Image (cartoon, rainbow, N blue to C red; front, side):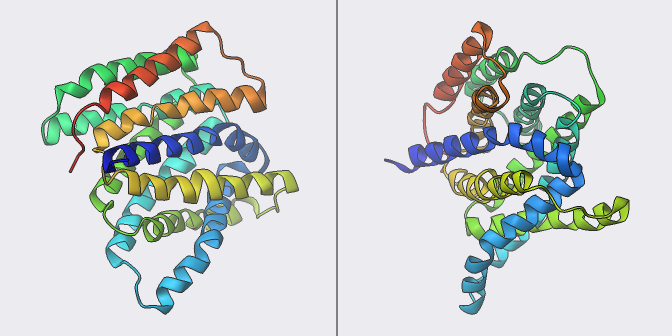
Length: 281
């Protein structure tokens, strides 16, 4: 498998893990709130990465470049996670998945304004947007939860661009630094009303969110974006609502109708079209 295809495979697996998070996020936020969800997930992620970081520190081989990039991405990630968690608690999992997917548009707009835009990606972008709309069937009315998730989509776009800049470094060090920033939400949560321990079910979901959609997915994202340019990567990330719809069906009983199946097919077509051609480097 060549580098580009390996990068694509890594990003597809990333989206699968992210897609599985939406039903879990909704259940966790209902129990511990958006602030608690954010810092608890961050601490659990750091606990998973602690042995690796201790090993690198003992050898004096901490990648400071990745550390700086991870902290920068962590600011965008933490704000995105908090806003997404807050908003998801006030809207449907499907609405949240669709609006989160709009970060693709902001990344493409950035390249169009800042450094030129490959029109080869215009058709996949349109297909992905149409497919995501059909798949998630978002409510046309606007509520506060939707607006909060929309704000989070700008943060996710910034995170993708930061990952692109630092993708040549150590993925796990980058991921640890990125996730560490989210632990700062412990302070406002404690001041807001005190910290209540999560239920066993919520704790299990937090551990899953930290290990799968957190540590594993973000490490794969950093590695995969070495070989896939960020505009094309965001089209691959539109598989996230496909997986979100599947997991919502399995765990929350949300059904997939004909339009959703068509939407998923359009997204798959967009991903296939976007990834034809040369690798990024």
